[in-house]
Length: 217
Image (cartoon, rainbow, N blue to C red; front, side, top):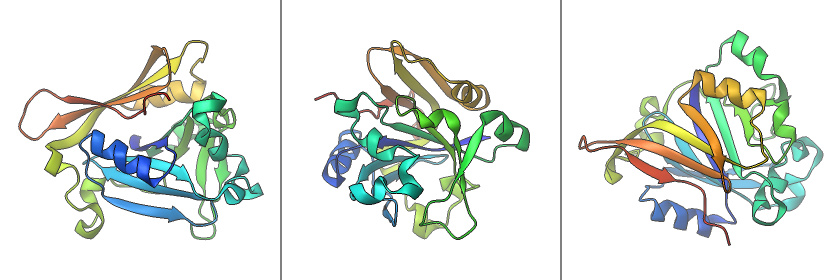
């Protein structure tokens, strides 16, 4: 089991660009999720990618096929007290997947018959969305035309640690604890939702720490 990507909800594409720029990250690609009402801007490291995600169509995001993901509610995190983060894994063993307690999400933009396992704990929008990715390989192994230069222009190689900060009173569900047991994910109590990645550097300098969460309004 590996971490595949991390998402943070932002207001729109302009905020996504600003956050990536503030972190010194290079945009790898963008995508519109047809039928889901969301768009993204992704920045890829060697082993996982960071996704800045926003709602562009409220009706689609709140439609019956999508509603259970609570993506729309997560997009309102600044005022609704919901969690703005998602954590996706890849290559989970059958035993681990069974322990995560998931339901099959079939977004319209994926081929017929393809579904994503989403943990039942994600039904609570005050918890992070935890789900499986259809991908099986890390960005370093993607075709060059898809992965580009990764984050090498910024001097970064791979993410070595992911730290999730949960506000006081929010307790990690069993699925999150299972994910932490099998990946470089840790969590702690913080004043507000935070998501920080520790990133190895090309030049061999000490790892950089990048806080992905936007500052509160």
